Image: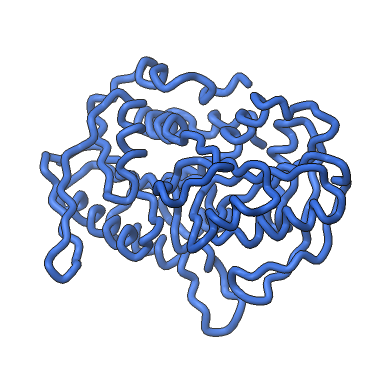
Length: 335
């Protein structure tokens, strides 16, 4: 597709640019992904100890000098969200006190993002709260993948690089032969995801439709109407995350019940709470495609699941930030 991300892992570290002044560290949330990112960059993960005191409190110790360094900390604030989020705050404080020159927080998944505005009286805005604490702990810059709401970028007074997982998903479907197919349509599971669905539809050069739904309660979904032509077609549903799976499964069943030939689902963040994996496997979905921004344990994996790597994307963004190059050029194909 002509994107800088189209190359293989080994190409990233081979480009011009000295990365010797960069240090990459990782909390416990997703060390497998951090190791893959380090490999892409051709560097070693920094040495850091993350333990727990007897009462469960997080204990962090940076095991090498960080003075004057350009430090990148990779930590998705996924489940257990309270632990991974608190660990990130303490890691940040450690590097701030270690006199790091710049601290960039790489959050493949930005937790506590679903309360991004007040809908009812006396509700918190947790997405803003997390942003405030990250800045107060010493973050110089934030890198996030597919934020739940675009306005979260505005909660920060520091630079935010918002990466998109859609191009990785799009290239997968292109390789599967879904581009330029008159029988393929992209589906947004709600009105808020129209922009994401439209961008994927442009990559696949096909139409898109929208499911109008209502949420009577958190994690409960009721399909009201489906806008667009999908009867007799293969539908590709796209969302930023799949949590309990209710929204995707109910939407897919509504599409099948109303005449769709086949339904696939894709997302950036595989939250997969509770019995989501079993629900997705037993649903009418023929395939579920996701990125590995969140670790997926063996018990959460299922036959219909396809997992794509996000490490090359994160490594390319980190490299560009360190070398003061454009990050937005990674997404020339994703409007």
